[in-house]
Length: 335
Image 1 (cartoon, one colour):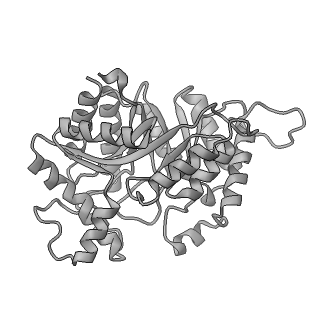
Image 2 (image 1 turned 45 degrees about the vertical axis):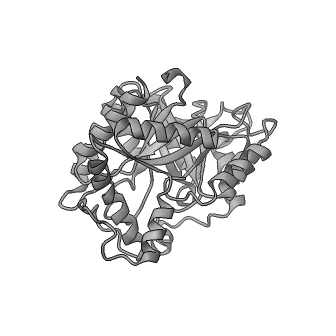
Image 3 (image 1 turned 90 degrees about the vertical axis):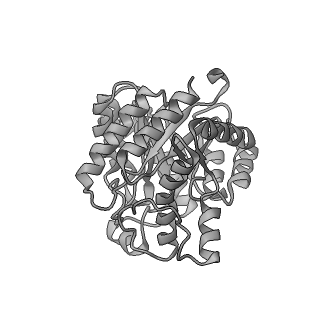
């Protein structure tokens, strides 16, 4: 049965629960990566976010190296590096160094958003995030990671010749169009931005250019993201998933992204109908229940989207709950 299923991966934001510290959160993510490796997940990606007290993944490539060093075979990547914040040469040097230390294990997912609020984005001091700049930066990255050209006056070293696999991340048709134009894999951020998912996939597949000079694959490749939480009972899974619901309720209110809240039985309490409907719509690509229920839901999701891979996101206040959920889903998926 598992041979018919698409690969399953993990996207990690290094969540910081209330009462915890970034150091503890990073240690928890290391344990989660080891659990994901043991359960047969293909990749473990780290997201880039800034100025968020509930997320400790601002130094994405540093964390990638830490995770790769603590595991043996699982692919480790960025989900993603936010290119508006970084010069392509600097990214190539960082990723190229990782690929030199951990050959054939490093992925580079690339995003167009800054991964933060406008004020913090200005402090990161780079530039804008329009589609044209994004595509240009990706082309530059490809050049720096490709074999050295005789005429090149600037070389990413380490980096040049590592040919690290790259993925274009997107939450709308804009990212999908860039991935299609460049002939690269597309990873949809459907775990928090599901509203244009079907349209984005269609834009990507219909516009995919295998003949583009930048093409890295012969056929379209779509990765979709989903929130997951598995437990021994539906009631317990729903209880633990309330952490995510409360977090997005707070974000929708313009909250300060406080550390992850504790789970509650009635997360909708105190929310208006409009607020709660918005949370449910935002999190509609979520699968919560027993491991078999989650696996069934993910199979339907893969079938509906035609996805080539699913990357899962799991938040919990208790790090052990996240690891138990990852393990149960991975074991059931790969059984």
